[in-house]
Structure formats: C-alpha cells, structure tokens
Image 1 (spheres, helix red, strand yellow):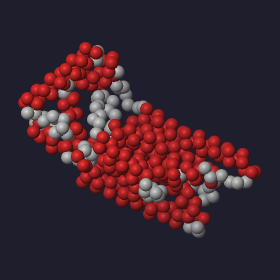
Image 2 (cartoon, one colour; image 1 turned 90 degrees about the vertical axis):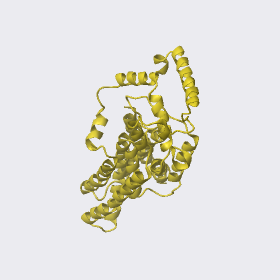
Image 3 (tube, helix red, strand yellow; image 1 turned 45 degrees about the horizontal axis):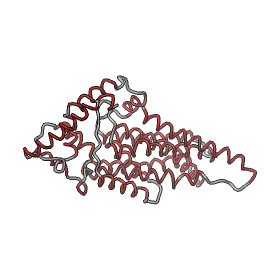
Image 4 (cartoon, one colour; image 1 turned 60 degrees about the horizontal axis):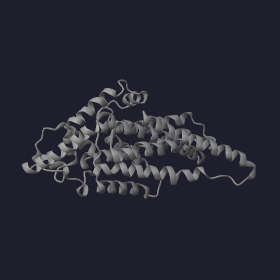
Length: 346
C-alpha cells in the first residue's frame, strides 16, 4: 500500500525532511524523541504531509457501511463510556445464561455438553489469538487513519510478563476474573470489549449448564439451583467494578492517546508530561489487566479445558462413539475459532 502511494523519490525526500527537522530541533533547543512521550511523537508524525495524504486515501477507501457484527455490537453497547459498556457486558454474560437454565433438562447428555465446551474453547482461544494479543502489542486498528507503532522493548517485556502472570495463576477462571477481563477489554477498545463479551458468553453457557446439572444431582430443586447460580453471578459484577477502578485510577494508554490527540495544540515544553509510565515505558497500570486477561484465557482454554475434552473411555465397544465425539469436538472448536477470525477479519 505504501509503495503504491509514495514513490521512491518522495520517500527519500521524506527522510531528508525528517533529518532536517531533527537538526532544526536540535539547534532550536526543542525536545527530541528521548525527552518526549510516545503520544506526542505520534502527534508529530500525524502532522507530516505524507501521513496526512495517507489518511485521506485510507479514509476515502474505507467502506462507507459498517458490517453486520459492528451494527449488532453498537446496538448492544450504545454508550461511549467503557465503564457502562463493561457493566452491560457483565449483565449479558450473567443474566441470559442463567435464564436458559429454566429450559435446560436436568439430565443433559454429557457428550452434548462436551461439544458445547469445545465450541466455547475455540471462541475463547480465537478471541485471545485474533483480538487480545494483537490489541496488546499493536493497539486498536482504525479504518480511516494510519497508525504508527512505536517499538519499546521494555514495554513489550512488561506485556509479556503480564501474559505470563495470567498463565501462572494455575486455576480456572473465577467470575471476578471474568468481570476484570470485560472491563479491561472495553477500556482498550469498544470492538475488543464486544468480541471478548461474545467469547465469554459462549464460554459461560456450558459451565452454567454443567454446574446446574451437578447441583440437581446433589439434591437441589430446579429453582434452588437457578438461585444458586444467580448468587454466584454477583462475583462477575464485583470483578467488573474492580477492573473499572483500576482503569480509572491507574490509567491506560488508550485514554492517554485520545486525550493527547485532542490536545494537539500544546507546546513542546509540556510534551514530556505524559512520558511517565511503568518503569519509564508508556504503559499505565491499567494496561496490565489486558495481558493478564490474555494469559488467563490461554491457560483456561489449553491447560484447564482441553485435557478434559481429550479424556476417553477405555471400553473398546465405545471406540467408534469416542471417535465421533472427538471429531464433533474438534469441529465445534474450529467453528468457534472461525467465528472469531471472521469478526476480526471484517
């Protein structure tokens, strides 16, 4: 795309202009890259003539109509506040799955439940690989603007530590963790929050049904089992509130970028004001929730759930049934991941 828009002579001229601007900044005593924040570097790049031209071309070539998934997500999450959208998402993943239990038979077939779990795992891993990880390292894609990614080795190192910490928690996700995952996703971007809500929703349904069946087998009535599930769902709202608190108090790069973009008229003397982050990087404490979420999803989808799906019965008579069940599970897992890939691709 860049080679079609910018010819080699223009590219060389751009490099020469950048070099001249650097020399001029040094002679004028203006702050250089070592003393200004990445947000203000991004602002400076957007003022370049070639970048403005690229933005115009990209805006003109971007589709005028939004996709069906985007329209559905906009209908489900109409607010511009990530906190409100996170609370709405928590209500979506806590309420409807519990109401579906009223239609669920107490003696549900375990093989059907395993196929549902496989579909949910595919969606969860697809959301992690196709949405969360690209968002963590590259940021949100903007269809009508060119975006630059400034490489910060220490920043990527801290993000990797956050992912590893989510993997090393060595237990299945609890509902407070689900709420924190939703809040961190919506504070990163509305699209990421919507896709994470979708993945968690399909992941919660088989877990709710499985827990419901266990309660029925333990002697609970259907009404009491549903009431117990509603009570446990309160933990998700608690986790969402904790995540919102961390994002609002600790800050995040997404809000910093938007605020700094709206204040492009600030002088160079204040350019270094936003440079303070975790250990000298551009990361804020709220940014660490998203990689922790990605690590948790990776652990839950691979270590915690897949081994259960691979368990087979030793009876030789059930070998053909086990093969059919395995094929159905892998097909459901592929379908869940494919849906997430299709949403990301659009």
